[in-house]
Each structure stands twice: as structure tokens, then as C-alpha cells.
Length: 200
Image (tube, rainbow, N blue to C red; front, side, top):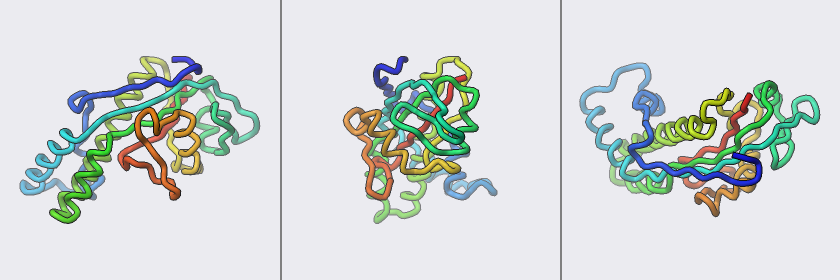
């Protein structure tokens, strides 16, 4: 992948692993094992999520520059963040990406808010685990064996959530994969992620 274009990736539901323990953690059930009734509901919700997902992503690789202390130039502009600056110090380039699990999960969450609030909550949690699984798969695909740092997303540490706007615009993410951003910096579909991966 070069800095000249935007790459696209798509995946089917069975190509992405959803970590069940992670989904339970999002529901606040990390400390105790779920009972049989919860497991049955989880299994039902998991299947609905798998039927609803539409995994899409766009990405590009950019050369890294460090104009000043705690500043990183990432192609779309200069980012000010001490934590990101330190995170990327050993890297020469970085991948910038946007990924989504699609709008189908949002529709399920909205539908079950009235019909079954507990099911809505569970689908929300499974959806979060699904997009994380998609990011893990995407991470492995685009880095392709190169030595890379862990993902770093806007909103983490001192990296402002406002940089999501710059990333999505730079990747043309709305036109390419349908991710939009509200005035309050929430992405639609909600199960979407923007991130930076430094390459050593």
C-alpha cells in the first residue's frame, strides 16, 4: 500500500472472530460466569448480529514526521498528542484506517429497545466486540507481517476525539464505506472505529 491511494477491505460474517468474553465484559459480566439463561440469550443475539453485520474498511499508509515535541504529521495534518508522539517514535510510516460493522447492528439495537431492552443491551455489546474483531482482522491484513505498534484511536489518552473528523475526511470514509460523523463527534454506524497503526 502506498500513500497515493485509499485501500478498501470487506469481510463476511464468518471471516471475523467475535470474542465472546469481550462481549460479556462490555455487558459488565466480567466478574462472574453467565448463567444458562444468559448464555441462551447471548447465543440468540450473537446469531442475529452475525446475520446483520456488513464489515467494511478503508485505509492508507502515510510517512510520519515529527515537526515539534509532542507533534506528529499524519498526512492530513499535524496532530498534537504527547501519548501518540511517544507511541510512534520508533516508526517511519503509519496506517490510518476507518472500519465499520455496518448499520444492521444499529437497527437491531433500536428495534429491541422497545421489544426487549436486555436483548438490545446484549446486541450492543456483541456489536462492540464484532467491530473490535474486524479491526483485529484488518490490522493483521494491512500490516501483513511487518512490525507494527498497537492501534491508537482518537479519544484515547490525550488524542482528541476531534481528530476523527480529519481522519474520516482524509479517507473519504462517508463515500467509500458509509461512515458519517455527528456534530457531537459520534460516528454512524455506531459500531465504527478510526485508528492509527505505526509501522516500525
